[in-house]
Figure 1 (cartoon, protein in one colour):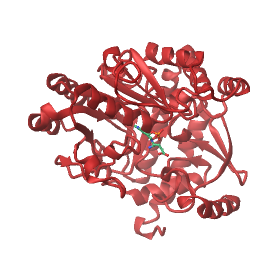
Figure 2 (cartoon, rainbow, N blue to C red; figure 1 turned 90 degrees about the vertical axis):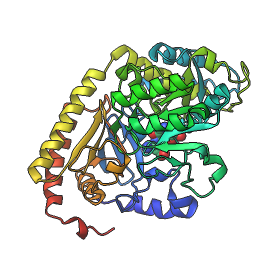
Figure 3 (spheres, protein in one colour; figure 1 turned 180 degrees about the vertical axis):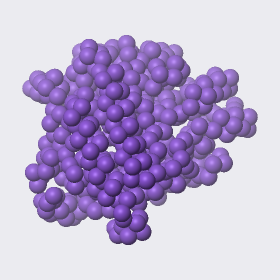
Length: 437
Ligand code: KE4
């Protein structure tokens, strides 16, 4: 496949934007090579500026559960844009999207719309601190909640690590009240509450993690988080920016039957337009200005065009209930990849929750960040490029999740499995140390 135009575009982009991208997740640092520039998407497919077609499993990192350019979404966006793109005043579409979210997510009685998942988690942390009057936030190694200063904390060793910034520009002051624990480690959480309980405002967790690759929280772990936060008067924040409306219409909390105090959302609820949301019980959410005193605001929050895309997307999901079909296709893909790896004698462990999954190049299941870091990331890079050459677009990092949309067909899955068989056989012959970046 020729990607000359992408190469030229990236060369120019590097002169214009830091690293040539507007989000580091898009640059191919983890797999080597250069990012591909895309011209358009259609259903399950992406078309790059060199005219190559790929079956897309990135789905814009989660939002595109209906595939690209879904007619209902495009029509809603076009109609909304024709009525004006932003008023900075309330619109009926905000009521409608809020109602769809509240009807779908049992723990949410009131919701605040914002412009990204980062804004949602940043605001949820502030709300938890404002509601409880406490300073500390607990997060977990391998969980990513957007570029919130207080949550950009080094994923320490398995022991609890008090906040050490993991980015220049994040000060000790903003992370000293953040405690990083091991994901899926109940003992660690019990110890943290025993030591810090009265100071903990909240625990934020991805119930289905998508940012160390796809790793599910165990039911014991989620149950322990619910019980301990309840007992110590802290709030449980489920970060469902990625899992919300992805793994089930009501999100992972419906699968776990756990009721968090605050839920953060994004991605799918905007149908590919900039959006985020956070919601919970009325008595918590009414702490927010102007009902309460916790400050949060946003020029484009609840934007008419973004809410139109979100309403169209959630309405299609609610009315068609595609989750069983997504589960069937996802199971076929996962089984096909496992068979392809086994045939090639390559260790592979798949982490999956519904249509969100990761092919871990690891002989053992991945249940936390430490295990994820032991994956053979060079092997993943080889597999990534072998699949690109066969027209399959996977996440450009071992530590990301891939997504199946309602636009993927059985034929797409079979084609992907066939490509994986060839790719696994091809990389089996290459020793990982031979891969030059
Ligand atoms: P955004 O600010 O990117 O909309 O959302 C931040 C966020 C919050 N919580 C979870 C669980 C998330 O997965 C994310 C963002 N996910 C990444 C993908 N791993 C976005 C990709 C990117 O940053 O470009």
